[in-house]
Length: 190
Image (cartoon, rainbow, N blue to C red; front, top):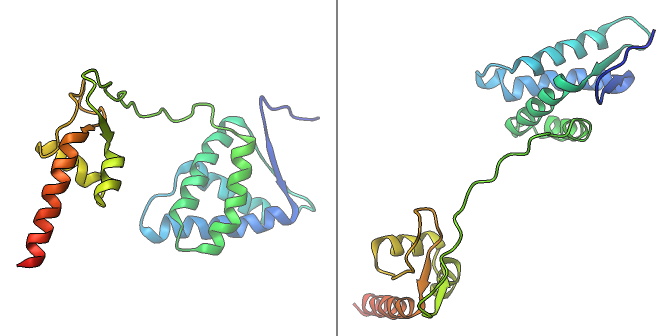
C-alpha cells in the first residue's frame, strides 16, 4: 500500500544515502559537537535516521523527508553548513544537499525587511548630497561622514526620525572639506 504525503517530499536511497550518512556525522561534529554546542533536534534525528538506514541490511533502504520536518531540516542543515566553515570538503558536499532541501521545501515566510525611513526631501531648494557621495568626495568612509553629521560638523537636512538617512548640505560639505584639507596641510608642514 502506497503512503501519501501532504506536500513535497525528498526520497534518499542507495549510494547517495550512504554518502550522506558519513557527511552528516562530520557536519554535526564540525558545526556543533566540536564547538561544544548542542545539535538541533531535527538535524540530529535526521542524521540518526540516515545512519540507521545506511547500515540496514536491506537491499535498498529509503529515507523520506516530508513537508513540515523538511522545512525545519532545510533551516537547520543550512545553519550547520554555514557553521562548519572550517571543514571545506564537508561544507561543499553538503551545500548541494542544502540547496536541494531549499528547492524542495521553499521558505514560506521570507525574512521581513528592515524598515528604513525615506530620505528627507529638500524643500528649501538648497543643493544636498548623500553620505555615500560625500564620503567618495572626501576620500573617507561613510561611517566617518555620518559621525561628522552627528557631531554637527556637517550640516544636514532635518530628519523626520532617527533612522532616516542623512542628506548633507553641499555648502557645508565644501566648507568642511576645505577646512579638513587645510588641517592636513598644516599637519604635514609641522
